[in-house]
Length: 80
Image 1: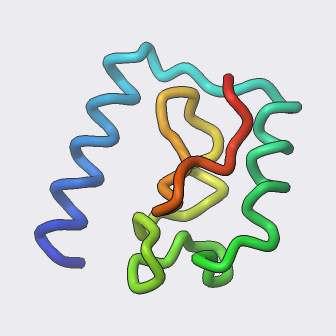
Image 2 (image 1 turned 120 degrees about the horizontal axis):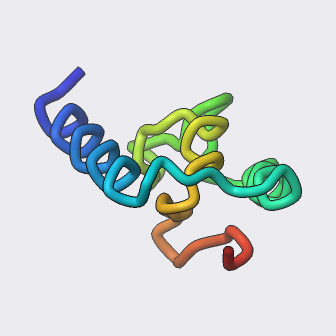
Image 3 (image 1 turned 90 degrees about the vertical axis):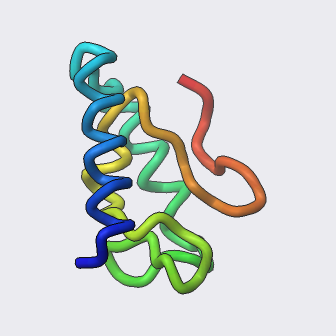
């Protein structure tokens, strides 16, 4: 894992903790995962950095209320 990925992970984790570790609802989580299904930057379970994503596991990133879809053209997730 590169130093950049580690830094971005720690930064994201700090945001999640400072937001009180809030999770989205089950319906919001399902909607986020559905939005990722046909996404061109998805590579299996990961939002692929080489395709413009963040490198995170989608199932984990979609659960946190504070995190947003990293699509280069703007978030594909419904607003929370």
